[in-house]
Length: 633
Image 1: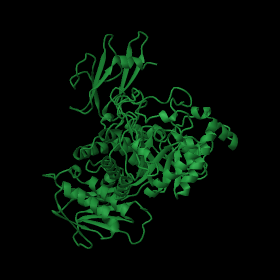
Image 2: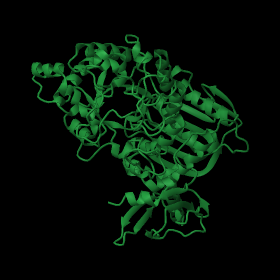
Image 3: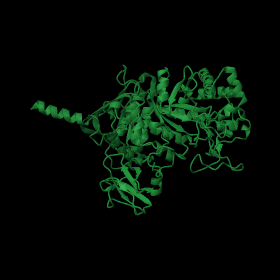
Image 4: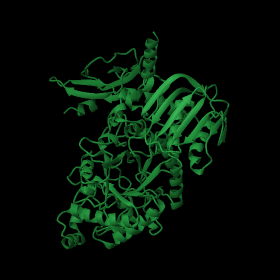
């Protein structure tokens, strides 16, 4: 009988060990191991934290102080030794190889909470997990009333799958203030993302002060404001004010780097060359190989590339001159100042989408090709990239670029970021180069999250469930060459920080789980149950997120009599779809979708909404029949 009871108890513990069957535990990213026990621990009125007073502990203690004082109103005292501490932060005296540099053990018992790690970073991530065990009100901006501040009794072992867990934020297409960048970093750190890729220059703006070239910011940081569909804007008139934009002073940069470091986030700068360089050329026309560059201006979003043709030829030459020595003098000084500012060992130098049609017409480039025995324009770019790699290395940094740097021959020590799928990353890894996977297929956060009738229009859609499929290590590749993965937020259609949040979350949750959690633990249905809990936490924190996952997908086909068939598909389980064709707004008393719909002959609009039981959970989607008809192939 005792053996039977023991088996039953063991089974009960195992059933909740994954954190899947208990709604109170919803940790993102999923830890390596969770074992929940019976009971809870309730925090006392006075919160005593046992921790050493060494300087490295300051970020961890600040996280506790800021969160607990803001949301709970509790008195917090930090002591080096405390017999009855509510929270004990313990640095291992002997390194525990299981958890490594960033892992931790968290043990919540009926008598208190202990977080143990090899490093302060590990303790910081352990505290972030502790915060997720607390009620959602811990994310609030004022003291919450009538909340029982308790956590489940639980043991957690956790450590990351990859060292590189990144988010790229494009501040060139639209400028984001220093405070907004800091808030973005805050949200990254909550989910154990540790690499902030700062895309600082592009055709639409140069955002970093370079003292050697002041016009990069006095001229290159500002354009004419336009709103609407980026890429189709009306070209600015000569007399329109160029006052939209901004830049970061070098002191601003230092402040953001310090802020990120206190959250165990590294910052990698990107200066995108030789393409995407119109802002630099507008400031210093001698960087161009094309006559008339002194008339160029910083782009506002008007069309400057023809994406319908092979090689996407430029309509305006937005490339640096690969044959001009001034180009390399310029880059030497720019990289030198950036290397002094950023402690992170890598500098990303772009290399993507370099149109070469103006190079083909340049006498200087033709002479360079003859001199260096370069046969193709790809080899011209390779020549440029290899010289740039030497400049970066001369400043004590490692060179990284987008996967186009493979074309024409990659430099000897270059690291590669694979964005056009994973093919370039696979090739670079097999050649012995470090790789960060960042494929459009899974992690391009500028892509629409729902149907295009519901989102600012971009040329592709990326659903949450697809992002969740991301695995940075493709089959057949040596995992040692893959440093990790990241998602990229390009901001052509992102005008403000609220939209940046909307585009990042919840797909950022999926990214976090893909780069931190064991691959064997990933399960979309389990994950999404946690996501909904984190939606509640974001509501408390007043952070915006996309509810697009509740919107159905529309698939359309044409019948022989020219009527349309529409198939609706939900991304998540347990939702019902209600619809109308009569222009009224459906609720759960309208027809429920149970199979393929045939569009009535004279209908002009299909409206749908998703419910969970009796509660509307999705947005009202208004789908014009003309839009559906345009999708018939």
